[in-house]
Length: 343
Image 1 (cartoon, rainbow, N blue to C red):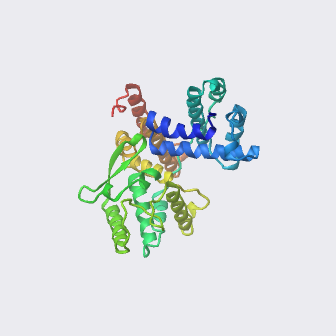
Image 2 (image 1 turned 90 degrees about the vertical axis):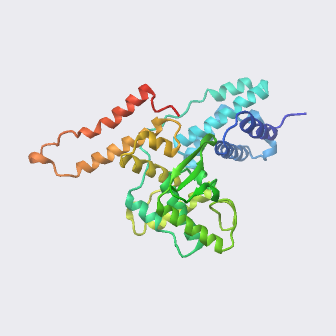
């Protein structure tokens, strides 16, 4: 019996990624998104149906064309492009072990280089912009109350969209000290403290939901009573950010996503002088180097604020502020000793 493309893809997801490698549902979902895009691209380019796909069609040149199309047609960033490429390489590495005659084909795919990405600080929101978005939903309706709770929890926790989509009512603990348990990458859970304002808003949403006769284990449900997906959460965030732009001009023409809230929470925690190791654990970062990006953003924001002050001493440039260096030096010291890498 000939091994079909569909069989190999199915085995890759069910047996290899889930059973053998034990990857998280979020990672598997990301790989699945990539595979769907690749299959659609293949079918459109060759004018065929899915059943007619042959592995020989997926050459290194086609993969490069596919990645270029993601950037040009879907406006994927270089980082997103690289994530798609990693998924494709993982698939072909699996194929080389399953179908030995594809080993040379796999080598050509593995030789494709990741695209260099610019080191840009993550986009974040000011406290005024956060307040504008949080108050955008219509709190007189169940959907508006749900969205208000969703946005509040996003800002309080800095959670990823999928993490909130996976949250259940039982993950909330309203008794002091109030917390929520979220499950992140690698199925690792973390407990995040909640403000009393967050507890009040989420509790109000749950009360309205109960009065409407809605019962479900998932915390956030769509209009059909089904669990919200990360895509649905993203659409609601974008919707309310656009609405908030009417009275907060700085939000105009900006693409606000759940990850924007995650970056904002991280930056605001750093600016509140929390220890970088605490922020790392709060966000569920695997590497403290990821968290360190927010130190750079914080220092840059302070520097811009300082530039707006009138220069002292008859217009002479102000002395270099001493607080611009210790945070970075502290980070570099921690990296060299790896003292914060211990779980």
